[in-house]
Length: 171
Image 1 (spheres, rainbow, N blue to C red):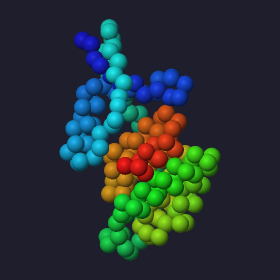
Image 2: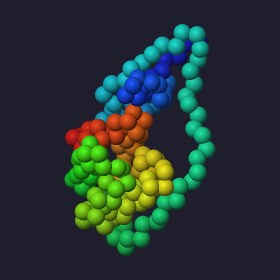
Image 3: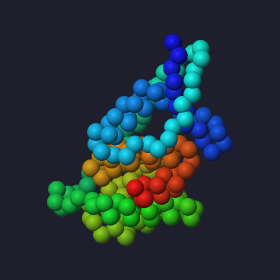
Image 4: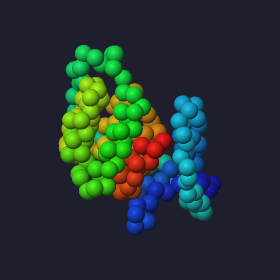
């Protein structure tokens, strides 16, 4: 049986991942339900003789996520403007050549929202410990939606993280 699948390519057009058409439909349907924007374009390939299966996730070390000790946790959310500024500032710093962890620390110092500052500091610590940013963002679903974490994950896999943040800042 032939399956269609989508390949993720890096900047040198080397394959770095793939997704079946069924997985793409599930993600798109979920995005519609949550009224998130769906991906703009995908490149689908046809597999003539061999079936492609979704890549299996390997077991990973459980990251150490520090609990946020802010007393204002229940009362303070992260508004859209703060998130947009975070995305825009991070895109600018990454395009300027600053490494991810120092950029996160710099932004955390400037954020006035205590809860959001602690989230960003936690992400900086997570990245410093060798983990990918998108995985750390998934621990804060009320701050970073699935669409945001998926976009960042694609940016990490393609080497275009700054562009991913710039795109998210415009949405």
